[in-house]
Image (tube, rainbow, N blue to C red; front, side, top):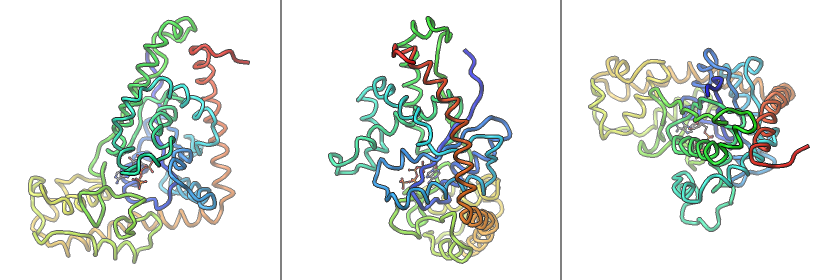
Length: 344
Ligand code: AQP
């Protein structure tokens, strides 16, 4: 069965939105608008899988929304909303909890990393995170999901859930007139030079919101001076920059900064290396500061302007929530029929 092409993706409102989220996710969301209908979600239900201060969560939800808008996502042409406004995500996630197997979830590396050694004390929600993510995507029967490299495994699990649901309920899907398959096997969209932006302090660690060092990341709300200071202090090695990508092997910090430059300049690693072959890091970092400030300063300014008008941001979320729910409710009605739930 051919599914209507649709993009879905989400960002957690867990504070400290950073350059990794910007390059790995949000700038891609913006670019995809030209080709697809898109649904972009602030996934606040995912956020509470680890403790969130109730006084901070609404602020962070509005901040991610402001970042979407400031980067150029059009909430009229597309749908922008926060997850908890559409109860169907949780409803479908329950069905998927009964489709997914324990063995599948036990393999998820994000849970292992986030739960760490204190696994007994992790929330059940953190363990079940991937089934909610599958529900986010499949409530809209989305065909494409732009994500960073770190989410690839969860996307594969979403495909496994869709496939098992389609197989387990094949007869019922046909009997209820939904063709041969009900859910698409969603494609991840992971490409470009910054699908995994690394920490500025350690080129082997992902740039992350929860890193205790603010110098490990560039936040989207950082001002020009802070961006400059963080880039100047970023870890490097003593060698000059090479002329070929092969010369970046075993130089994770150099590779990371080059990748960031290429992504911000909308070019490739090869092109960036041509420009800086043989240069010292001091020269390269000056160029990187100028580029990062030129790209990020307008985003921060627009986010600040939008933050001063939370009423407008809330309207965007409410309007998006209503439009998202109209689609998700249709999916959920069909899922209830397929599973065999008696409904009104
Ligand atoms: N470092 C990164 N490089 C490229 N893409 C990244 N993403 C996150 N970090 C990087 C992508 O951003 C989108 C939204 O991420 P998220 O907020 O839903 O979750 P996350 O991956 O847990 O974010 P963090 O910053 O890494 O948070 P913590 O510190 O809690 O682990 C996703 O598409 C993600 O791939």
